[in-house]
Image 1 (cartoon, rainbow, N blue to C red):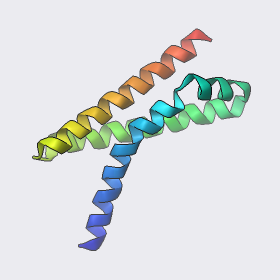
Image 2: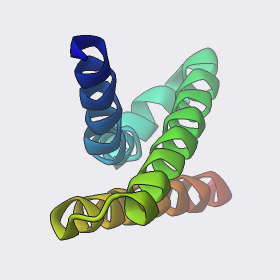
Image 3: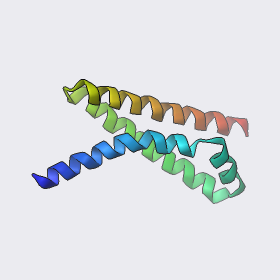
Amino acid sequence: MESLAIFVSILLLIVALSAPINLALTTVRVQNFAALHRGLTTSRRIFLMILAVIGILLATIFLFEVPTTGLKLFSLLSIIGNIYSLIREFRFSKKK
């Protein structure tokens, strides 16, 4: 039972931190720094996409499968934050 609790807490941690990490990776300061280094831009975008997809999928699972309202709202905020960070990334890449 202890390993199940650890697994669920890791899943909740991924849902909780995926949106703030992605929003931090799409700030103008980080994007301009990464634009100076060619490999860093590519690795940042790959990491952002993977983390956003995992965060959105896990948050969707929690949104539809968990009966508590608080976790549903938390999952909805995570989905919105991840989608917003993806939109910011695509807008920045279109500017250049």
